[in-house]
Image (cartoon, helix red, strand yellow):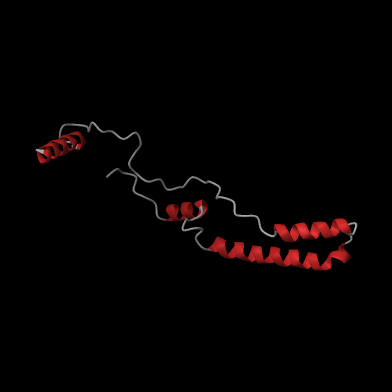
Length: 120
């Protein structure tokens, strides 16, 4: 009995979708075609880097009346941390970020290989 109900449901869906009775009853509100562009959304911001090194440098400056020469070691540590973070950021930008393409990269790929503009 349950199988008969499933068949009736499938026949009803097939009737609603079919074009033999004219236009289909189930009508999409947008064309069923992919666009050649992706919404340009900002990616999530990463975590703050070098915060501890920066706070140590600022504490040293405050103790020494903002004389750079007396905080040479803290400055070197902070700049080394910044360089390391920039190198890491550059290497991540070239690759996929978390398995996703950047929206600009996706749009350029979609424009290079455009979709057909007719519905299936």
